[in-house]
Length: 165
Image (cartoon, rainbow, N blue to C red):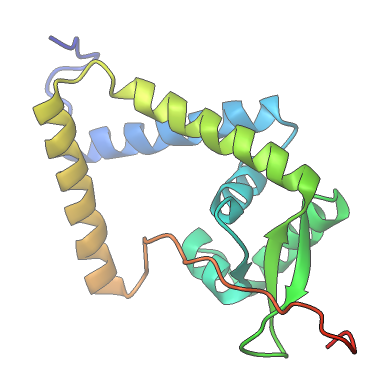
């Protein structure tokens, strides 16, 4: 049986506390890798491959100018690079550098392990119910607002040809 800190917690209080707990996990892992929580979220999204700026804007729920600043700072630290988008030469994809990939993998694995540990004491059925309930909340929000909560698919950057194009 799992002990509860606050019996009678309302749904609103539970969701707010859970959001703060997830933010705390990102904050703790970020500090361990000398990242901001936003940089950690960006790098974790890029673990599977490059993603375009519009996909990152939707996934991180940031304004374009905020994302540009976040990417600029990560690029300055040598964590990410901008590469040409094969489908639209005016656009670019953001990909991890070698150093960025190492940090991203460690941060991603650290966040995932800690989030898994948060629910490790729950019986399997409660974990399934929690996953289903969170999924339903996210789906309802997406249907109502048009926001997407799914992870963007990695995209393929342009490979330099004979003439560098």
